[in-house]
Length: 447
Ligand code: PLZ
Image (cartoon, rainbow, N blue to C red; front, side, top):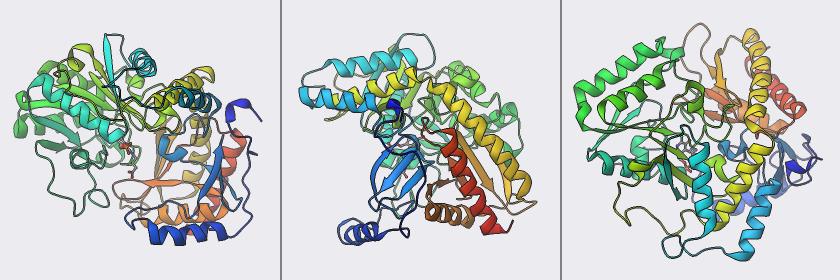
């Protein structure tokens, strides 16, 4: 097997026990006693090893991974350069706290992010532990720079689960329900959702921005934060022109345009970042997930004058930019460069689109196939309407798990299947996974 694929696991789908198998069931019992019931699970299995396009569970079942740990292991699980980086760094230095004594890997990651994120202006970065933490800090920076309070977010947005970021997240269940009161000065405006609003980018922009101008006031806006393709919201690709118009409005009105690329970043969409598709250059960009091949790391990267506007000591955290996570990031990014993963994401996307287009012909519950690169979704609705079918994706995910395929659901209405395989998955494995999904759909709605 190719060196690049990490652990020497056979790249195949193989179900050898009932799902969940006996060992997974045993762990489920222990979990029930020991782990808070508040944590959900997409599949009922417990993973032991993973690499390339497969996850092997504790019972020896080999699953095709079409979720990549929610767009995290873009370079594959335990990718060789990631493991090497972790191993080498762990033997040298695991922690000092960057605010106590600095270390090179932190600076190296910031240099790399400043180089690869959109735009060739002078940028600076700061590192954190999670996507939510990056989003929080991007808001802090934007408020400090502009000395304004309001933050504009969009319908269907997902930005995290902390108090500020859950406020910014659009969906009540499961993210916000019973967790209020929420943070002040967060304002939600309509997104561009071509399937459901039928609007072109300019019209969708006017609709959103009129709300901002009349209800909030442009001069009160610190930042407009948007996922260039909404992730948890259902891989919603805005109409062309929507993002550039927002960016221009921010420039014209002294607000900070923040792209939350936590889910879309690091080659997922067929470019290094989703903003690259329309040549959008955000003032600030938040990244996490794919950055470090599975290690917890996140970043805020932005125009130097914005990032430097915060007082010394104003940003930080005990673990943010941990040396081992930084070494993993350098391994992860090097893998993306060596394997040309933006290109591979485009190939994966073409393969998925081709297969799914055929499915859409066959099944009238498919309202739309959409996405960019290796970030593709199927939206389900009652035939001939846009009325969501929220039970179908759940049923499909359950059927796929039984057959050895891990797929994830999404969407404000829960009526979406999202496909985001590791970018090192083979064509054969991907095709097999999609065939299993097709069979599950036929079984669920009748061929
Ligand atoms: N911004 C765009 O997609 C995380 C959430 C999983 P953290 N998405 C997966 C779950 O149910 O908790 C995400 C995102 C975007 C921010 C975040 C938050 O990133 O690393 O989960 O904090």
